[in-house]
Length: 434
Image 1 (cartoon, rainbow, N blue to C red):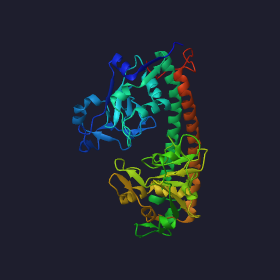
Image 2 (cartoon, one colour):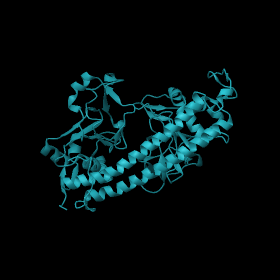
Image 3 (spheres, rainbow, N blue to C red):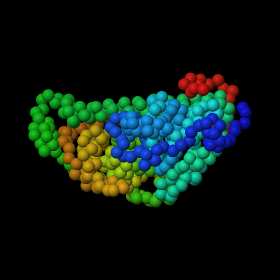
Image 4 (cartoon, one colour):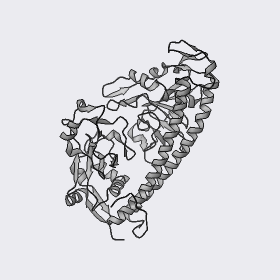
């Protein structure tokens, strides 16, 4: 294998007439420019687990796309978050080609003649590289990057053919992760469809023989009772913490707002670890339910969103004061309550009670006061029994994802540094491109 070469991103960019540029500034793209339909604009919040998430993505019309055409994305570009959570990035595929690089992001477009885009995508994800970039960032409260900083990033790379082989190996792991993630989504959809069929549309087993009666929540099956969350569960606030309490190794896994997905559910990437003190009520175990009670106003999507703590092979967790934990009473199965919080009108109704200017806050009382039509004990236990199988399968898949990520991340620096030499291996590189 030939010795790898080390050059800066700026030097490579200049050689290939590439592009390293920030997205449009706020003065070029205003909140009033966004539309319900149109071309997606990729912001830092949309960079999730190395992909561009379209959930809640901003969009602009044709006129603004043409006005800001220099910010259009092409296949092989890397969109990199230049403020806040530095290290977030995504590789632009055919799906995102023609979309826009948004405010708060940076576009890196270097073609593929010197550094392969997939190789570069993985290279920029190495913890050592992310740490180097973070240390160059400007700003104490919210780190920011500029083009000069990104152009100065040193890149060590082997010959192009070897880069493609490395990209193929690492991409194979990500493909397996993506497949398992899709399977988990299908399982969650099954749980949602069953909940809505039984407890929203009231087509539960034996519903034909149960008359409907009036209630303060509308027409409900006879025998169901209107009750508040406070009568079904105890609510506990999480732990306030200092940045010094968060560590790379040791301690316990720490749950915070980053663990909550915008549609509800749990995000597994980037769990921090907590080494400070905590009360028994501030830990959580697999199957427990946590709900977001804080959110930044520009997000406005995870406030009141619940998540079920998964079984990922390690517990207990400690959860932050931005979350609350709900502990159901004995006759209310946790898996039923999770369905009730996630798949009912709960998130959309309760988030209306959040207040704040720069940061949204939700009082736990707003959660406790939410009312629901509670089905008979036998029916809620039957639902919980069915979906518990679904969640166990999802947890098993999530453990596989964790092992795949761990293996990929261990391989990453060894492959890129040449410690593991793949230059002489016959590797299937279909789909990697040239």
